[in-house]
Image (cartoon, rainbow, N blue to C red; front, side, top):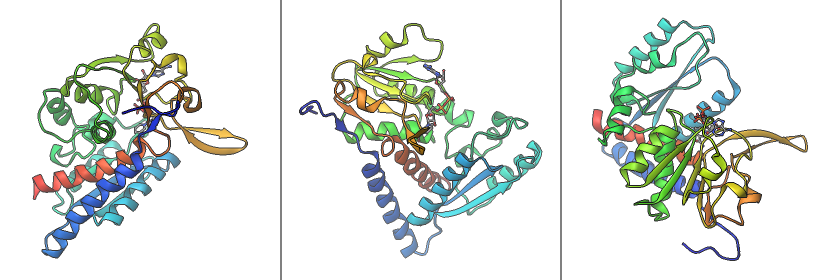
Length: 291
Ligand code: NAD
């Protein structure tokens, strides 16, 4: 990968996601042509958080586009934990459903961990059940959280070598940072996880050959955080208002960093589309295992 005229290579997650979705759609068409059952995905949404609604709509739209059977179960914001678990159990036993996703965050009166533990691990397409996370950390095949999986696919697609490479992951959530660290270790990268309590985070970040930010703070990462010719993966999605217009930006100050790094994922159009594509890939994987 060569950098030309201080312009970094843009790691195009949208194109890659389209390619992945196209392949899945072809597989589903083949199942249909053989009169076989098609994969099914159920999304459970509690309440009407606008961001969650957008995510759920996108998931449903993508499922339908590629031929995955899709159900969305909308529950009232004040639904009890017991009622929510009852819904999860119904879906566990539904033979037309291969993947179940409980959209997070859940309202404060519901313990997410308790709900996720009730999912059938073989239908846990978000990869957040302790069974799947345990398998991931012990290097076994399992359903892997979609965003880290999407990042690994981007790195693979662009033939980015990981063996022995120093990767700094900023953010230690169960959704992104921690599972990503496990996947990177699995490819022999040297991994540092930095987070809100890390001292001298700017200098830690500057040691990265590959820098991955999953924080949720607009324009946190400036050029002074980035080593020359580093590869930068921006996971953050942050809503900002510029000139009265709302738009999504990442954690990385793109304009500031672009002259320093060798390659970078844009926001939008980088990790985001790959997350949805990996959800569809996980649904197909669960289908193949469960059928
Ligand atoms: P989270 O809030 O669970 O975790 C954020 C992490 O950032 C924490 O581990 C915290 O220690 C760390 N952090 C907070 N402030 C920091 C600081 N100033 N310096 C260094 N570290 C700091 O969030 P999450 O669910 O992991 O998501 C992170 C971001 O990624 C959000 O913007 C979210 O919207 C985005 N996201 C994007 C996708 C996608 O598909 N692109 C998927 C999931 C999450």
